[in-house]
Image 1 (tube, one colour):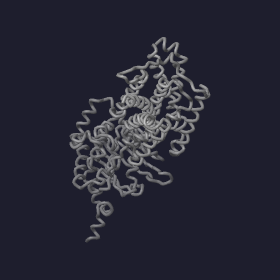
Image 2 (image 1 turned 135 degrees about the horizontal axis):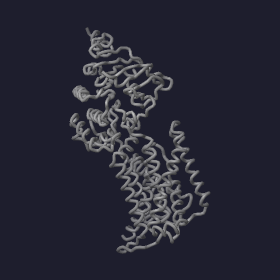
Image 3 (image 1 turned 180 degrees about the vertical axis):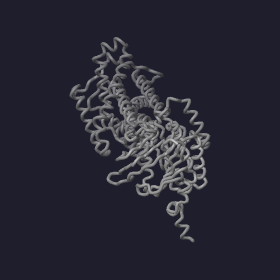
Image 4 (image 1 turned 90 degrees about the horizontal axis):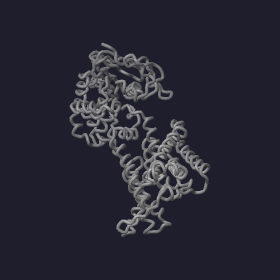
Length: 245
Length: 303
């Protein structure tokens, strides 16, 4: 497998506070990689750094062999990295259709292909087609998540960064969203998935990393992480189960 | 009845000036959350630029393009000139201090306003100037007993074309959606591949360009222009912006037109001296009952 995205010894600061203290990870072509961790561990920081929204203190981020460190956020999208931010961040006063069009902003001249991509997104999320002329702020939380993901796919990315796609959704919807993540991956798009729902994330991921207060503490195949005792206790509710016994 | 209709037309004419200027305030506020206090003075600068082009360039412009062509040419050149001036103001007065917060930018905006106003006074002199009747024809029409000047019709047509064009760009094109997206959430807009600097350049060019054209039209309509006119019109247009809902493009248009009509009706039915009282009373009432303005609406974000 060829490495698609490589993060080397990445350090990020918010003022004098170290959010990431030198982390390294890789994502291969076609993989689903998940980053687990509690609130404040630095998961979103990692994604925001990759997509160019945060200045990098030291370390490297590379797509293929191209360094992304000083590339501006709007150009990183063109390189094939698409970031679906935490909390969906759909443009509330824009219609569903306009949101999708903005997802394809980097190739806005290419009307014909945009239409094709849109059809693909509608195949994944049929509800968006029914709601395409509605203001996206009026959608339900689950629909907004679908729109955010659909919008992310409109740039025809090679890698999709997903930040907490299950946040605040009903269990049935969570299941559906994870199924769709797998479908997206089947189309050949690599996925970096940041999640608090560790059980679900590990069930679809190939590999995983555990992030704790800015450091990667555990990494490995998803199946190994699932049976790892520390992971079980901290992220899969193992401790609680033990107590109950 | 005739008086009402005539005043309504007068009101719409003035209102379209307010609306064109208000669009500049609203676009800049929408994306930058900054009130560009220099905008009114850019409008005045447009008026003076048009004056110079028409009065001193009249022999050339009117001979080459005819009297109407000369006016259109003057408007276009003023639009480009003021558009450039707008982007320069952004670069000199605002960009260096974005990082230190919004309040310093407001002070800087007031500074830019004073610089432009005094610049106009130094270049063109403190006395009011007049667009002469040789370059701007004065034709009075009588349509079914309603008196209307030809210039009024021209102003209304041009203003509505400009507003329609802007409305189309902002509300119907993907580039317009990108502008609205930047106004809502810059980081997420960047994740879409939108270059915020292009958007900022565009709004600081287009807003003042519209204001500059309004400036030329005010000169053609009233003939008399003065270097302090930017303050007056700026304040009214800013009021119109608030009235319609700041940051909202259709709101600025409606706010401007409404303000013009209210002002005219107020001066007919109440008193010319109190027309501003009437206008600001309406503003206060709107702000009490609809603090976000007539079209300003907030859709709750779902978390």
